[in-house]
Length: 275
Image 1 (tube, rainbow, N blue to C red):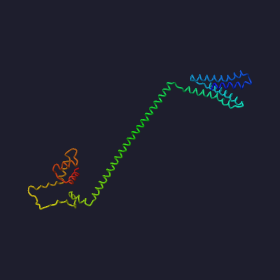
Image 2: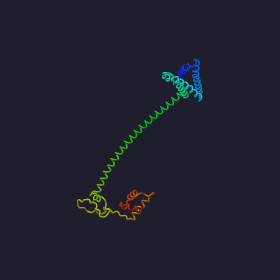
Image 3: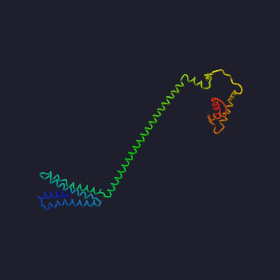
Image 4: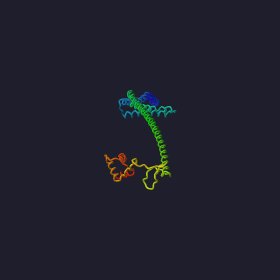
């Protein structure tokens, strides 16, 4: 594009100035414009190769490009059909712009070794990203499986608890209805000893024939009833026979194992008085 621009500029200068001056002078003028442009371009390329830059050289180069473009535009406007000349009038500036782009490309160019290193780094990054994605997918699938299993187990536990609660509810309802029944109180007073006044006496076993009371040595001596003071003394002695003191259940077991006799009500009352 630079060569075509120089040829067009030289041809236009020769045709434009050929009528007013000898053509060798016109050729010298055209070559001067093209030579100045080419010289500034070469110097700018040399500075770029050395890693340097000169603003005045760049300004001069663009000035020569503008001059060449102005010559082509002025010649095109003087022709009867300026369309063809105007179509190529932008070539000098376009050539200069392309040289600028090429300089930028050269400043960013890398060696093959650096390019291979960059490719390796990019490939390593892609591999790590792929591995991370696979790990995340696997962890997500595992977590989904675990949550499904936990949810199913929780649902089974909830169903079992619901059935157990329903069974317990029916059992408590049965017990409540039995406790509130009309014959429950009479049945309980028939199988337990009388501990309060005005309670129905216990049932007596039926007698099927005449009986005679047993007398003589076969008669069992009645066990003497302990007084409250004696009962308290025995309970205190058994309770404090060990350190720490025995519980009520252990004391009651040892009390009866020792051959003593007392109702549960009196024994618990003595325990409360002592404890």
